[in-house]
Image (cartoon, rainbow, N blue to C red; front, side, top):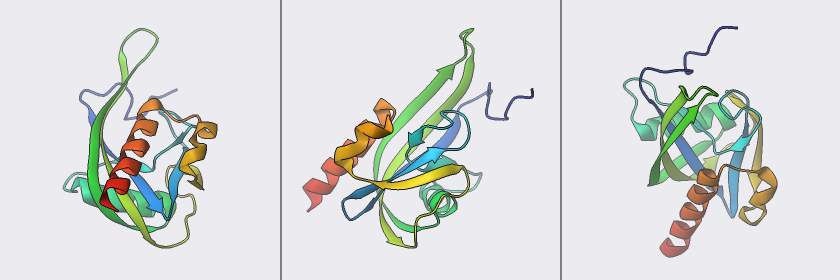
Amino acid sequence: MSKSPREYPDYPIAGVGVVVWKDASVLLIRRGRPPREGEWSLPGGRQKLGETTRQTAIREIREEAGIEIAVGHLLDVIDSVIPDGDGRIRYHYTLVDFDAEWQAGEARPGGDAAAIEWADPADLARYHLWDETLRIIALSAELRETLV
């Protein structure tokens, strides 16, 4: 079995995640590829050469969810370092997370997304999200409350 070009990297890979809001719901995707394949997460993906992080956010949401967004605030930068059983670094992502508002389109899974849902933030426990994902969603919700 050959390894993915993202496995055992020589340097961290820059990725962008987005907390997309539509009214009081947040967009979640079920990941279709490693790492965390099959798990629910925020939509997003790898930054391309020459692309700003905000451009990455817009492109990734368009590819994974088929919707248009308005990118808002930078929420945080997270290091996702996942070792293998021998302690070697199997994945290393530097994740830049933004919040955004839905603008147009009907959400449907595409790209790396195997499934997609608009979730009630009060019901996130059923998705078994990564602790950092829950923290970022809460941070975004808190920010939205202070700006109202």
